[in-house]
Amino acid sequence: METNEKRWYVLHTYSGYENRVKSNLESRAQSMGMEDYIFQVVVPEETVRQVKDGQAKEVEEKTFPGYVLVEMVMTDQAWYVARNTPGVTGFLGSHGGGSKPTPLLPEEVDRILVRMGQDVARTDINVAVGDNIKIIAGAFADLSGKVIEVDRDKLKLKVEIEMFGRLTTTELDFNQIDTVE
Image (cartoon, rainbow, N blue to C red; front, side, top):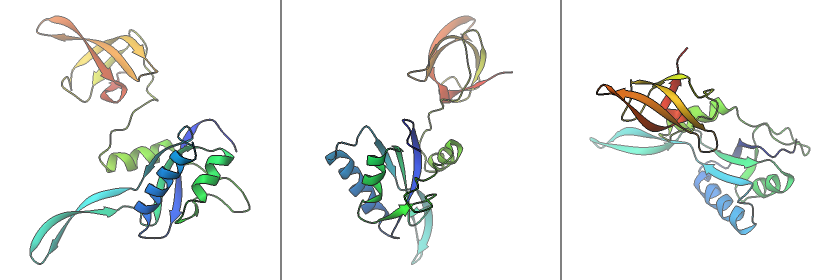
């Protein structure tokens, strides 16, 4: 299952070692020249409000204790580097015997990253020049416009919107718009 596509995988770690695994894997990727295969390592956390001794405070808690997400291209060498990182006990979705793991679905990763407060770049949006769109985020939220240029490499597009009785052009990210049927 060797692929050139970068996907998200789940590493299983010893509980409490998630941050150590993250830093170990990032430094191993750099020292072993794997930056083109291992991209992001994320320990899913969320801010939780706790009351201790009558004092309310916000603390970071692991969303999935014992697990770390890694965005990587699944090659034999990248797989070897990741699974042999100190503290890693294996990949979720690997059935042993040298079988490569199953990647997470893009929707699963997006949900986790959004829950952590990270922006998720949308690449699946189907827009073309001349399409009508609705702006869902940013300074022009709730306005509608017409696409005049699409840059799929940068995940950006130029949109013509009407403001103060005249047409104005603005550049938006894919994740700032929604298509209009």
